[in-house]
Length: 270
Image (cartoon, rainbow, N blue to C red):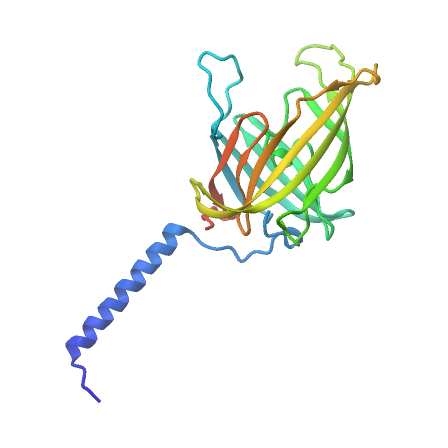
């Protein structure tokens, strides 16, 4: 057997140590993988108490920003935090805090072995900002399916749901004016596409594309026969197992891309 001199052993030890240090630094740079079990074992939307996603506003391809156009300024950032995951009579209740600027909306999603139910005022419904000033949605009923269960997103699958909800319009601060309530009807169909490479601030991900088609109408309770159609449109959402929603282009011409993903301690998750 060939003999290895002590200087060679020292050199090998130094090389091994340098690789270990580099590996630790690289792991810290990339963040860590979470071992926490998500609600209802859903990988494409891993809801765990304390998890926080931050999204940055982006302009979708093909959307032109017209100069001097009159429109509401879109917030730069959107933050979604899992407040709690608890058992409920309908399966598992996932309470989220969805925030942008000074608007903070608490939404409750439910999941079971059949699928995931999402309220109309959640970002996850169609990639649109949650909440509306002076408007509350109550008594949502669903006939159909909104998102799949732990089985995940299967290419070519389609899910359809009809949703009805009461719309309560609140009085402006300092006034006593009463606004008549309204009834809202929404049809939503998702079609699950293939895997695509999606590059966002958080990193480059292999993500499953999901197309969401929306249509609907609203009517005041004082005249339910007079229904006003809502603008129809499609949204595109991309999901990555273990990460969640990484990008969304909604029907309003707005886009959101994942910037950070953190666990309950505030540490980055790969």
